[in-house]
Length: 616
Ligand code: C2O
Ligand code: CU
View 1 (cartoon, rainbow, N blue to C red):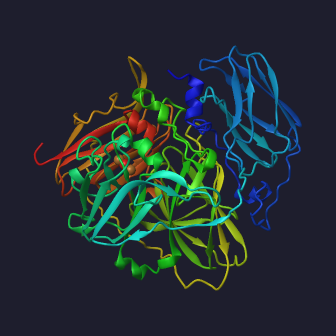
View 2 (cartoon, helix red, strand yellow):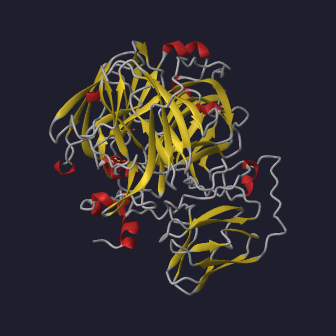
View 3 (cartoon, rainbow, N blue to C red):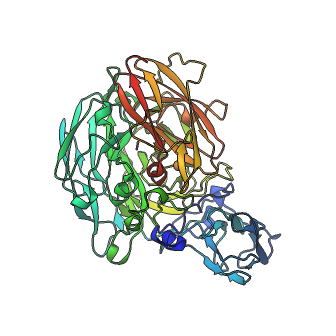
């Protein structure tokens, strides 16, 4: 048996739950003062240090049910000040920052044995809101605000160009899964991973929506990884081609052809950035971590008239985190977990990497021209969420979700995306020639104090150079969302929680752990249903519904925010939150999944099956 601390180290996750934090609202303008070397300083940016902040402060760890409590939890400190932490409990705790530096390590991480006092090395930190937690008791969290409190982002050096995975356009595509060495870092050896077709992420499948597409996946992975199963996330396909976790598997040495019609009720599916990934029962987190992910981009020629940026001005970005050891080798936090399937995902032990990659590369840059660009952003992380923002404070115009265009564009200063969520945005680089702009992830700004926090990192850099990009625009009307009659009555409520079993707790839906033989709800083909998704746990979940074009009817009893008024397939559910969604069940009968897309939670049992049937 591994010790608790062994498991934490094994999972590299120094940062997880961790991320569950009070995100204080941040003003992007003050960011110029946050030590981001490349951030152009907006003219109006002022960062006057708050003179009322103390130059010395003390946080006491007091006994509490779950190991201890930081008091006060939220502390202010003048820049250059001294912070002392006193541990009055009978346990060891740590005082660890959520934010990581260029080396991928926490900005501060001090072990404080029972009954001792330690000084935290914060004197060199720039202005910012630093979320911290105890790595031994990840439920213990707080924030330290230094100076004006702009978001803390420490930027790495951007030394390699962004790459796009190879693109496959054919009507019948063949992808061989095999172990291969891929380039993640600009220097040093390449990194062995499990791949689709030899790259990470795998090749981007690019197809016109509405055109039937067959993909043959061949399993030439080393035998020890066993059978796999592939899911086109947010696709609409026969049950047998949907990536069933425990059936229609692709065994070692075998292949399977999946048929994706890319239509819904004979109409083309809305064009969007979706993705494909392994969905094997109990192994999804491991297989995705090791590399079995790729983008699936559909295009719609009828969108031409909208005048959106297209071609090389339309850039897909897959954001995901991994950890690496010596010689750029991918760490494998799952190695030691094999015999403990039921202990995969205690809260705070999910799989988090210390490096955030964009299209498989660490800290890339992309040359862009002054003009409009469309960025289709996918969060393909196992657990991490990001609150995307641009370093000079300019907003995004969000034009779509990952399931199609929104009815109208929405101007957003920052965009929160949890695992598997996507956002389709337009960025305006005009007036920035010879400047650099970074894509950042900043602390959540939506005021949530108990939801899982976001990474704090500079992810990539745009270098604005050269001639103006061709004219493009963002029209005020984008897509028509089909409005059909939705029943008033909720026909199924799904509760996402933590349940207690004989061997400890497990993530569950309606109190049950996933069992591929059990059908949890039946739906008649052709009907429209209203479902309610409720989070009854003290932890954020990102809930994904397979198969249909889902719409969000309500969030917490109110009309959903404008960016949730298109089609959607994955919803953020903070503790206590609920959403009501609806879909028409079209075309296909059979088993489909509903699950948390934090993949450790999914593997731990937070998954269920709904079955579409001809007759109820
Ligand atoms: Cu992207 Cu059921 O998963
Ligand atoms: Cu979850």
